Amino acid sequence: MSAKFERLIILLNDNAWHNPKEIAETLEIPQNKLQRIIQFLAESDLIQQDTTTNQIKLNKNWKTFILNQENKDEDIEGASDLEAVGTIIIPPKQIIKIQSTRIANLTDSSLELEIRVNKRVADIAISKLK
Image (cartoon, rainbow, N blue to C red; front, side, top):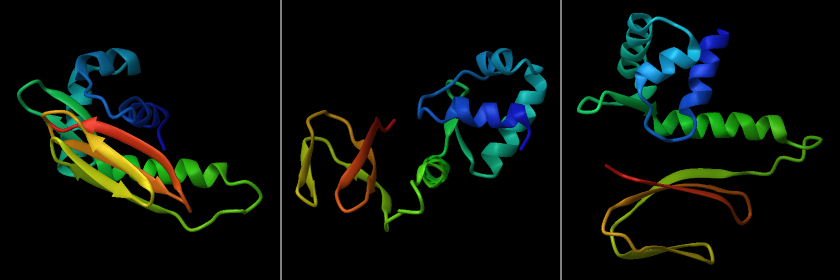
């Protein structure tokens, strides 16, 4: 994988919206080249693009894939167990229960919950839907 492309994916892996101008400066590539890359990634459903703010972020499906790849790299001496990965939308002012863990959304907005389960709830990442 190209070093700059890999750096782009790493930059977008934080689940936050990013300004393409700042990304172009960070990666030290021309803005027009980055725009062509963004267009390709958006058409390929690898990234989400907010057309009102012109910001981008990594698509949830690819973020989960990247997390799974990182976890495979971290397996200790082949001791990998079965694992479930999923995304759940929690409506405003609602509570859900996963295994024995209650998760409450006390906000007025829907929240997106990314979860990885391996015998117990291992990781939870929450982001606000727009």
